[in-house]
Amino acid sequence: MYGLLGNYIKSRAGIAEADLERIYTCFSPVRTKRNELLIASGEVCQHYYFVNKGCIRIYTIHEGGKETSRFFAFEGGFGTALPSFIAQAPASEYMQTIERSELLKINRSDFLHLVETIPAFGFIYRQILEQGFIMAQSRIYGFQGFDALEKVKWVIRHQPDFLLRVSNKMAASYLGISPSTLSRTKSRL
Picture 1 (spheres, rainbow, N blue to C red):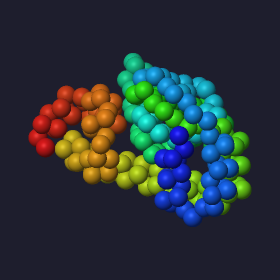
Picture 2: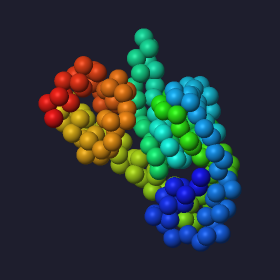
Picture 3: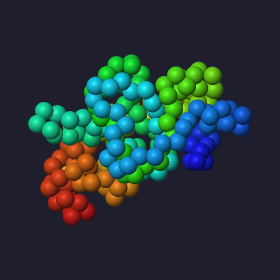
């Protein structure tokens, strides 16, 4: 149950086995259904999730019901509504599992305690934040000048399984194009 999480941590930082065991005790397993909400807009995020199996999507819903996907976490990755989790303010986004998923969740106080008391865990958290920032910046700035084909190539290069795992509608909202444009573009590859 904790093997994938342990591999994730050990691949990124040197850590004592006792510290790893302490980390495991703070996470609890959660099984979800397809399209199950983990947090709704307006709620305050209290948990960080690690994906053992499945996928978490973070998205917003605009006036008129249009959805925009911001982030996807697949197996071996972390996901949360980070602005709400950090600031303890109501989330402006939704977080859901788009497949039946097996997650490990940790509450905010335990998470922050691990960051403060286990240097390897704090290092990993900083890596997650830095990589997330870099990926978001490259996506935002890169997408501003990209046409649909360049956007699809970017996502294939940076997230190879993305288009195989996510519906066209969700992928298109992440890429900032229409589902029909995405279909036409994929056929050109």
